[in-house]
Amino acid sequence: MEERGQGEMWKKRRVFHICLLLLAVLQITAPSSAQTTTAITTSASNPAALSYRTRPADVTVAVGQTAVFRCGVPKASPNFTFTFYGSHGNYSLTCPMAVEGIAQALYGSCLMKTEESLAVWTLKGTSFSDNGTRVVCQQSKNPDAPAAVLHVYGNSASFVTLIACVIGGFFGILLVFGLLCIVLRRSETLQKWFKGKETEDDITTIVTKE
Image 1 (tube, rainbow, N blue to C red):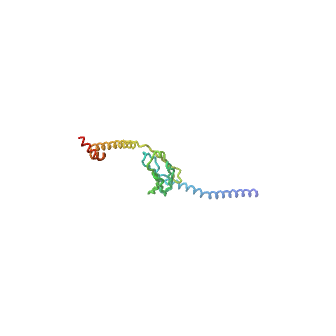
Image 2: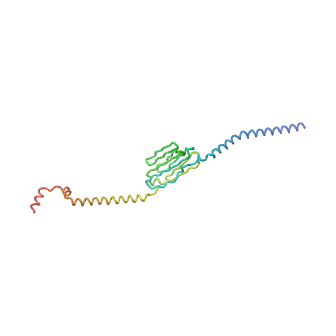
């Protein structure tokens, strides 16, 4: 009986120790779980920081016009890149500090507004080779990367104006030459200047014949 009672006491103590170990493990893991929950709650409580205040939009311009692309993020999370993929090459603006003068026609800059970190790509004097140019905006730690495309079309009005100018210039030149011919025929002074002075022999001959 005594041995059986000691065995039961030993089993009870063993179960008690196991319970204490489980409690200790739960207390150790509880802070890390709380920290994870706090981090998730913090990220979820400020979703506006990982967003775009100005999303790049598609641009359609006539040949020769200027194309402008913009992208902006909240000032609370100002770090992002704005990449240009075009016929001039591929270039990236790393905001909020970068300012790029890539070529004579392409210029990029980062601006810090009151509540926004803004990037701007400006392409001057567009041509048909710029058609399909693409820009991509990527905010740090944000999986969303909005993009936009440039569409360039022919300016028929400008083409018609150019043809009209060429035709008008051609007829203008003809008109000027016609007026010059009329003036030369009616002006004795100009005729003498072009023909030169008559010699004395020519004058004598003319008098003799009369």
